[in-house]
Image: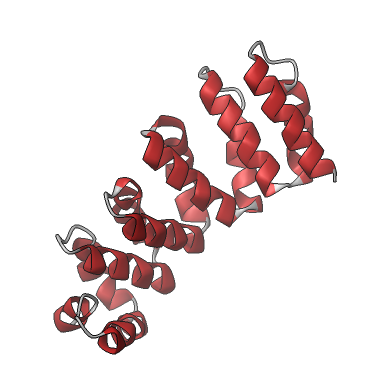
Amino acid sequence: STDPLIQALAHSREEIRQRAGPALAAIGSPAVEKLTRALGDGNPRIRSGSAGVLGRIGDPGAVPGLMALLGDSEREVRREAVQALASLGDPSIAPLARAFREGDQVVRYTAMESLWLIGKPAVHPLLELLGDRNPEVRKRTALLLGEIGDSSAIDSLSRVITDDQPAVRREAFEALEKIKR
């Protein structure tokens, strides 16, 4: 059973915690369902440990549970969720882009971090957000595209330089400068 290993993610002894994750990752897909349920555990070590293991296993079915952790009250839990979603790559991009557009400040920031870690595969979905009605979304998107630094964003960012919002224009210009370096 995976239950004792999941509980070991929160063990008081660090060496036990460090062995539990790789053991669960080695079990792989059969552990995903219980690990996904453990994302809602009251213990932050179990939530963060489960997120880390799910990222290593790489099962796209874990995306919804990991997305829920982007707004977790514990920074370490959010950090593990960001890393796990980034390691899952493509299946995470659409939900992350939605959270980046619609989430509260913490969720937006953590979704942005995951998208940045994913990098080039996230560029195309982000380009669509440059046309969002909300100027704050357009500004953050330009910033993120500049951080990713992929030249495929140049044409879209060039069009945003004429945005009616000065902050959006400035961010698009700075993003273009970063990409062209």
